[in-house]
Length: 85
Image (cartoon, rainbow, N blue to C red; front, side):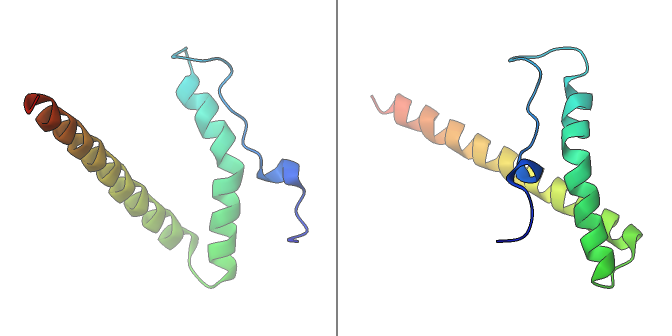
């Protein structure tokens, strides 16, 4: 048990399915508390906040590129499988 309430671990989802105005802002608001808690933990471990921010930016960028590469690979495999039929 971490002493945290289960409600603290739940992330608020989008207000409705599909695209809508300010969906990106709703996502930012939903993620902000957890992000700041992570930065606080990094600072408590001895990192400067600016170091934590820079590391997070790089991690997010690398993860986004990896996600795009996986998606492109899956699409290519599906296309190649389809051309064999």
